[in-house]
Structures are given as structure tokens and as C-alpha cells.
Length: 192
Image 1 (cartoon, rainbow, N blue to C red):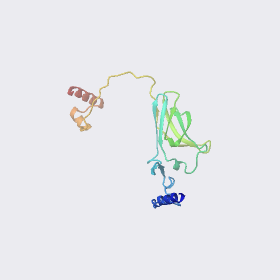
Image 2: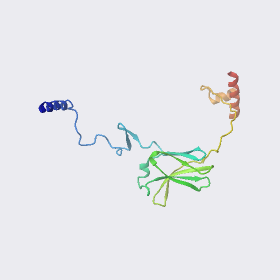
Image 3: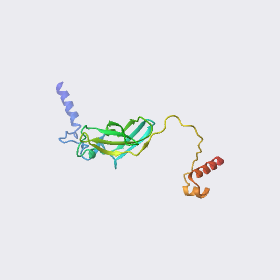
Image 4: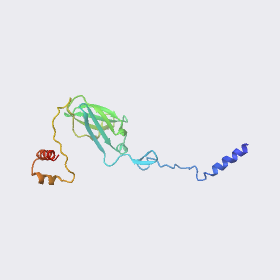
């Protein structure tokens, strides 16, 4: 009985003659060509194009910062002393309000502010411990006011996609952008 079972297994193995164990890796490493090996063996670049860093106000007390940076090239020569990347928040007068450690590979972070006003956000690291290395600085961020804004009547107009701005100016005459929008809004109300 044992002999019959062994023969059956032998026959099953012969059916898969194309299978063999390789002495070398069959999947190339992500380090080889700057690609990350993401599920299914699809390689994607770590960063796309030039480094990008931006920050915008999310609400009156929160800033959203986002980045797309090739960290391997940034830390090619030396790693940060504390092995962390920091976001520093500066008020309009240049005073540093806050510094927070962030996960660089996350590509984003929300940071809270203490008061309404203008801010700049800076991304960087320390190397050595007391020397700051700036990677990127955001443009000025103006925080929105607190509270609910008043409701106002607004005239909206749908501009036909086949009309260019120059054609509209020709139709309605030379005017400022506001006047042109008002004229088009009145025209649309009459047409409907």
C-alpha cells in the first residue's frame, strides 16, 4: 500500500516538469534601479520629477503640508543625527512657533497652529544635532478667519465651452472681468 502511494506521488511530480528551484533571486531588488517593488512585482519610482513641497490652510488652526521628495538622494551623504525629518512652523514675523517630527515616507502631515495669521512651513533635518538643514520652504500660508461667513447673493454663469474669452469680449465690448461676468449673467437669465 505504501508503494502504491509513493508511485502516485512520483507521477504527480512528473506532471510539473517545468518547475525548478533557482540558486539566484528571481525578483530584482528595489534598490537595484531606484524602483519600489509594490505588490505583484510592479516597480514604481520613489519620487516623480522635481521635489515638491506645499502647504495650505485646512481650517483656521490647521495646516496641511504635502511633499514628494526622493529621500535617498537627500540623505545620500549623511543621515540626520536623530534619524528624523522635522516640520518647522514659522509665523509671519519669522519666529518659529512649532517643530514636529514627521514620517518622511508618508508624504504629508497636518500641523496645528495657535493663532490666526500668516505662516510658512519648512521641511528639514538636523545634522549635526544643532545645525539645521532646510530641504524645502513653503510659500506664505494665510489662515482663514474663524466663524461662519455671511451669506451673499452671487451671480454665476455657465460659459459655453466653444466660446473663447476674446470672442466674449468682442460680443459684449471691452470691460473689466467683473463687468463682463455681470453682463453674461444677465444675458443667461434672459435666455433661460
